[in-house]
Image (tube, rainbow, N blue to C red; front, top):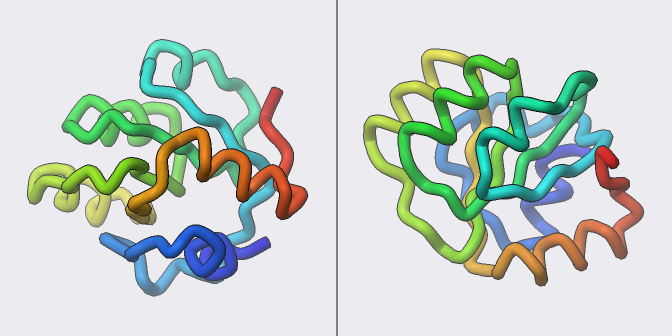
Length: 115
């Protein structure tokens, strides 16, 4: 499933990376704990769902080479986060849905969890 298809499913707004919406999402990981995100070893095609909306989340994605992030609960992405995302070709989406609802929708669309 492409990021564009994911965005349509969850009524997401594209914050950064409009040119990369054709990226394939192969699996999903939902976490607000960036230390848990750093434990992921094989993450090609990983979409990170998080409610953590600060520089730490973008820095973690930068370090872990995660290229797709979905911010849940309608959190507002800061300009500093956008700058880091754009510098690293990280697509950032935002949805008004909770992490639970978003996870359920993506699960029902047959997107597997990384674990």
